[in-house]
Length: 122
Image (cartoon, rainbow, N blue to C red; front, side, top):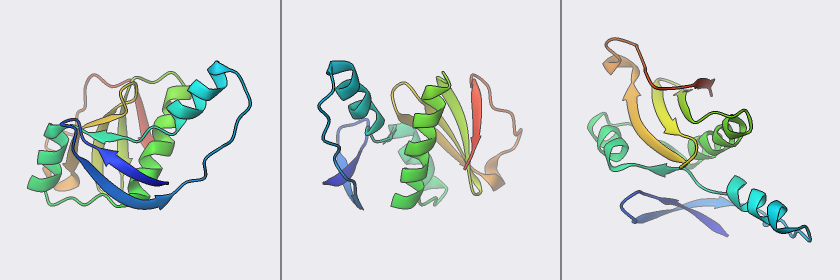
């Protein structure tokens, strides 16, 4: 299966990462949990604009790392996380699997992030 990045506006961008599908014989809760863990992180329109403005590229490998971090954050009970990815800070809504905004290191004036409940260093 080729995973896709689904943006909030509904458009899709294919990425070339192959994932193994798990064949489960468990109950509904197990199937739901597996589906939830395979959800891809989306980019909000605001985040798309910030990435474009700041010439930030997020590779398929980076998205995989962000997805893994979102899964871990959710297991820990996080709702809004600051993810530090190389020289980029991302604010991610864990519940909706949505990158809300992105800021590169040179534009982080105040270096203060509010309304987050966790930080993940990737």
